[in-house]
Length: 251
Image (cartoon, rainbow, N blue to C red; front, side, top):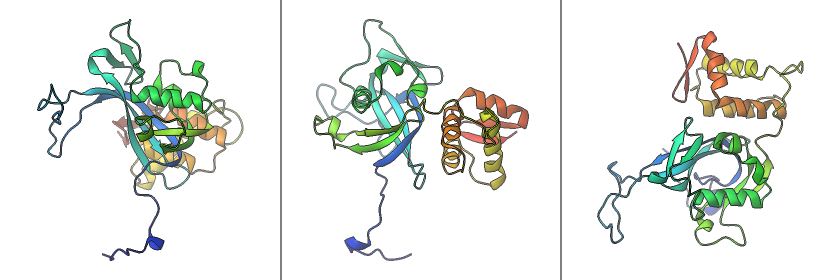
């Protein structure tokens, strides 16, 4: 092992903080339970629930990847609200509201993310209800607390400050040979290459391989939209490949 230098001039960049040009490679809703170091639910330190387990929350799990650099993936969470108000369906892609009179709370962090996206150019009418369609493939510059009008709470969040590419950009992509349209075939080929190389063949790794490949940008974006879809999983079945969680494995 090498002794670490204390000289600031010899410091390395990084450190696990999600800042810079990042792409959303997966977006899902799900339950999140805060836990302590022993893996038990954390206890509240505030009255009147002091000493009681902090209840789980519905959150938006957003995976941000530095695809154009080292491929580091940052797993971010944006709170949505109490579990009693929402039900995640369609593999976490959609939230159902248990009380139709109540929508998304304007006090939650996920609302702050959506409103920030609108401020930097995302058209509100493109959101829909499927979080994967709305967000996966979106690229931009992300940072914490650099907006001039950030509130104290929002200033702590990792939010987009610029949008470089929308999820729908380049969806009608040419194939790798330019003859038109076999994006599924390209994706199947990339999965096979990962498996043959011995690299851990996860969907996140497939995303990184896609963006580091010499494919046209339009094809890369179409592949991003396909990687986390049921369509790719079905296309791999005749090839003897299946998805085991996030891992591609040969049957």
